[in-house]
Length: 318
Image (cartoon, rainbow, N blue to C red; front, top):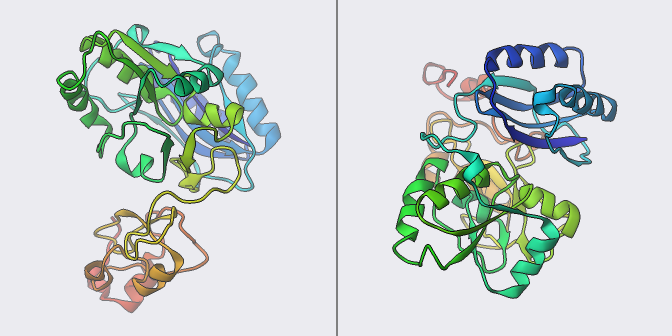
């Protein structure tokens, strides 16, 4: 079972909570990435059904986390290489203090669907470009953002192109956490009518399927891209090289590039897992291995083999 969840709650000693989590997951069949800060908790994980259910019960037994909402779905394999629990000063990297209590109105997936069909709203995708490139809601505005930290500037520029007091904005992200911060930021900049998709696209897919959704959903785990309703769909994006329809992401095999790019199976062979011919000819290139598929590269991943066939002096763990 895979779980996605977050909760903004004041924690006096988040590092203690990190240690509690690490102790809990000892000898459990669970992998994932969990961040804990003074602001709260943000987690994505997968595990055996018994261990996942035990974790949900264990977390909710703490009164501070009792209201956490888990988005659950079945997966065929573990979607992370290991369990990582870390302290983070910010759950979302905005570099400014935002009061999430001042955010927009939460909208259920069913109501969101009705609002989409009304045509009365500006639908704003607040994810990064590489996320919305492979999938997004029909008619959504798609800002060309590369990192979370770019959104405040985008929001400021938006005040110059639409009327903040009259424009009704529906905003969405993958699981909902970014909208908690971004909606509050939008209201600080003068936007009066802000609505955010409760639970994000993940929750929408679980309840409404792919209605009004095009393509796949980018996820921050080994799968990289998944159908929102579990059913395969036609790609809306194109291979970086040949421009044929494709929605499979890879990290460039050039270890000094590691760029995330979309690539079809034919071009993957031609470019040997690289995003360009320049990278294909670089000195530190991981060998293409069908066993790893398009899973994200890890530290030490195939580096020893790459060193054996390239210049050993040029290879070091990054």
